[in-house]
Image (cartoon, one colour):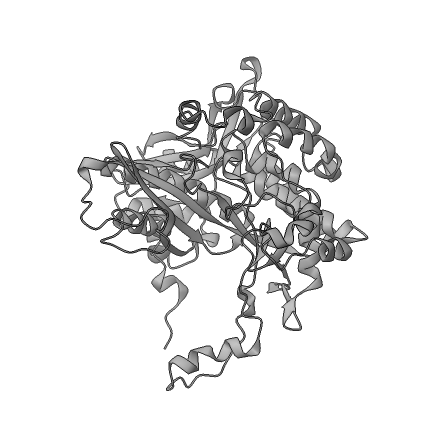
Length: 506
């Protein structure tokens, strides 16, 4: 007999309450806290710097707990966001019950819970990134009938003192992909993080060592990745935020540094935030049609490609983002899509399209006796330009906007056809095809100009506000990084100084 989803779920609240997190109520949270000796409660919410903040309460009685879970609390918005003035700074933060989890790092038993921002009138804060994402998702579904789900691949570097690392089994420089110990040194940190993230509600697909590994002076660098399963946009963003916080907490315990910076040094693999997406209709995937990528998926990709230069304004938000997006690497530089092609901006991974794919399991297990079933529901397309400097909520909002735009484009299928590539565009024999493709921005400044050009798509249906677009443009232009790569060429010390300034980018 198969076990229930609740029985194997690693979230302690899910197990104890015997219900999925999506069904948590205030009474459920109170019951868990009372019956499990929880002494403290942390409200968590995202600041303007992209990091999770904390507001901590000592639970003094049930009425106090009930009030916190019913009314939330007020915070100083001007200290959290640069665009909120001190004379109108008060905001409410309201807990989202489904996000509750036991904090694994606290000695005092503590439950953490993510919060949403509300304004003085008790309505969702219009300028909050989460509010924009929710509206973008809702408008997409209202206009097209499709639900967008997404997941992220969270890449990061572990930076350790070389003298404290056993180098008896050295990995080959830039050959760390799916390497295992003893040739990797910090897979245990990753595995602990995966368990903690899962216990906090994150739906993890897998974790592994990534390409990047090297030594530089007194330091050892090792790249890892944790990849999630597709989920609602809100769940996907929330869990990525928690994951980044947990990885940093573990790094602090291990005495190492974890960096989500898009570039650590020139000539070594950068860290991206690849995002996989799929569309559902009535709860079922619509990504595959007649054993191939569906026209629905092609329209969605066409819309994303059409405004992809503008999307970088939300997915690549620091100058070093564009040191990663360079030719001849696995990071994209041109606006195109392809099957299994890692040089494309949008990649369609292997998707169990063929009927034979459902039968592969029987070839390696001759005693397999169950009925074969299609696994094409796993099919996604992957946007490969973004990196961990992204505003997660706004990036996912931008994806929803782009996909909706694709269904409103009369020529979407023609665009998809023209931007399809089935070759390595960086080989000399394909230079003519490469010349036909538009380039992604090469700096924050160029990203800002691209956003201005497609501003109307983002502000349509009042998803993004005019002020938010203008503030984003102003923020990106403030870096003054036009042609930065050319200016820094060969100046290794200046490059190192720039990279170091973004090591702890949110």
